[in-house]
Length: 395
Ligand SMILES: *Cc1c(COP(=O)(O)O)cnc(C)c1O
Image (cartoon, rainbow, N blue to C red; front, side):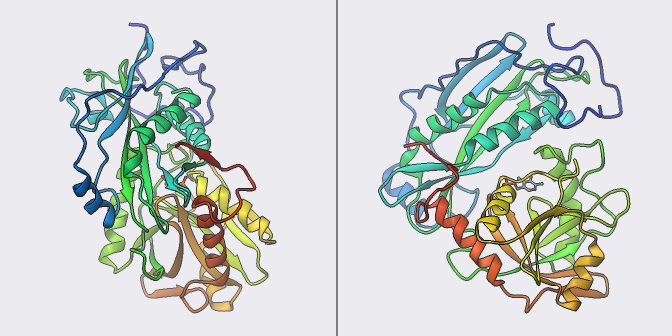
């Protein structure tokens, strides 16, 4: 029983998101032992016939179809092991697996792109690896060494390289995740944790057509994250907490929901799974500062860099929801967009509240939004020079 010494009890532990790996009692970490996870590709994994795969790749959609393989590793107090690339198949879990009861789980999302010369590249996987480690610490999960994370992605894409679509903004979406697989109903960090990476071919989020601005419902009573909570970690629990508000958005005819801070109900945070940007009338880009309750998007940080490269001033600061509303009316806020790996950069049309709609500009795709989006997708797909070393060759 090397794992836990204390039971956290009913209230969630409130370790800081950046708590050091070794501080919290009972929190398993990989420690400093050298970890060599090769994620070797297993032989004999059945493959979908080529014709069937071609049919999927012709119209992949998002998150519905999966490749032939998945990467896997298992952690116990003895360390990481059982690593490999195996068949993508249902997993067997005890009904007492801790994740099913206490939601000890974190995940990531990143994409691999095929360039015109056939090579395949991941976009900033090291950033996802670092965030995965930070999320794991917050959820009292073991830390997967960052090089092992990148290696798992490399090996999976090598095994399933035929699944990486060509053309446009098509990509292979990669979903690394880790969960408490130990069979135990006691409340403490699990002593067995499973890490998996699955992959799903993805078409352009907008089906190759025009980019349609999304409408945003302002969550009235629900919060996504609170100070001291898990908002800065990429964990399933945050999404579970956002679903009721997302349903409310749909009931009000909106595509997405925006959350305000949980304390004052005044400061704009983010959408359920995307960060927000405002383009002001002087060309400045403003995004809510990282407060501990916002997820630090890899797309967000890439957009901050790209906007600066394009000659814009960028500001990370608090944004009062009144500034959004009134800025739409006065013209001070010219464009609003949301960003994240899945949808890249998405223009925001209206902010909808009971009895009020606030629309920036003409409600269409703004000039700056389009330019930022273009530059980002050009770098990802190899059509623009990768001046920041963001691309990582996989195949
Ligand atoms: C994943 C995620 C984002 C976007 O992050 P990217 O790294 O840009 O994909 C934004 N908000 C939340 C809550 C997320 O989970």
